[in-house]
Length: 374
Ligand SMILES: Nc1ncnc2c1ncn2[C@@H]1O[C@H](COP(=O)(O)OP(=O)(O)O)[C@@H](O)[C@H]1O
Ligand SMILES: [Mg+2]
Image 1 (cartoon, rainbow, N blue to C red):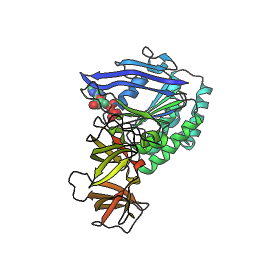
Image 2 (cartoon, rainbow, N blue to C red; image 1 turned 45 degrees about the vertical axis):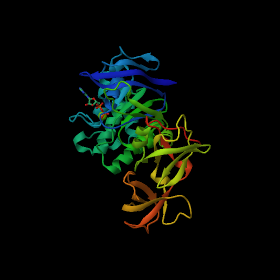
Image 3 (cartoon, helix red, strand yellow; image 1 turned 90 degrees about the vertical axis):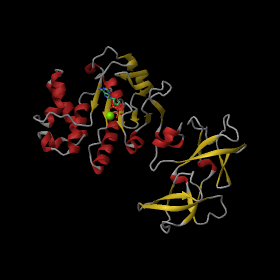
Image 4 (tube, rainbow, N blue to C red; image 1 turned 45 degrees about the horizontal axis):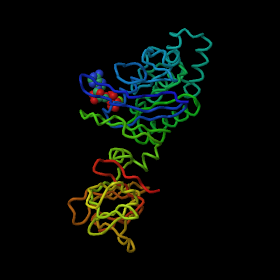
């Protein structure tokens, strides 16, 4: 069942476009992650769904009903913010019970909901403490607990982990994934600018970008499963945003369109990308993209066509190393990044980089991806 639908949503503030033509839906039980650069309107979108803001054009429905006229408290949503916004003078238990008491739920019901949330979030030993006596991670769990006790149909999370250190982020991320499993019927709409969170938590990613004065630029770049965005970015924006280190992108000219795909030239050698050419012909300017893990590297690639490079910098990360390489004799090509397990390579070494035809993405001059052959 579709729980949240957003259609043609747009918002301006002071004549400046903030969101344009936002369209996506979230199924019951689905974990939807909104991701995109700072300032692209992620928080604004959550506030519109929650009802905290509402001067937008377009439509939001929850459970099939337009919520335009529904006040926040009756939308069956609960929001968790980045700043925990706990009441400092109240205990953990009272913080979690506060909204339920105000809604005049029976005391026994409040007690049972708070106990259940405390169990899920492992807050039972802390129920009588005040926020000042909690760590950042514990405070954030209380903030999540306050959302759980409301038994919402939709959880809205706005960068809930961004104030936590790396270890706690991982721990709390696992916690949130578990919370989602235990609340199988509730939908989650989760905002982050952290790709790892987006990739690991999402059933569905909605990638957003800032909109400009150009009415042709809409907020939503691509909607899909994490692996779809990773392996089939719809355009250059998605290709640049998803993946760390990011995809190598090289400007090239098409030399021929063949039965195998699109052919182009680098350092006098011909390469083929296994993509459908669309209407493109020889001579067209395109961008080819290859992810660092799909770049093979070595002093001798046993006759395979390689791109001659020199290693400018190495980041040895233990599990693998990243090679930052300059293409020989070319000022036009940007530095390339290759992932390798070869620990013998040194800065200044001459190497060849290579990749297979089916690892190459091609983007037209309008930035749109050519369909890849699978
Ligand atoms: N109250 C406001 N008045 C005017 N502009 C705002 C207001 N709130 C946010 N903005 C602008 O809206 C854009 C989106 O903000 P926000 O939703 O916070 O982005 P994100 O959460 O993706 O970083 C930003 O350019 C921001 O400057
Ligand atoms: Mg924000």
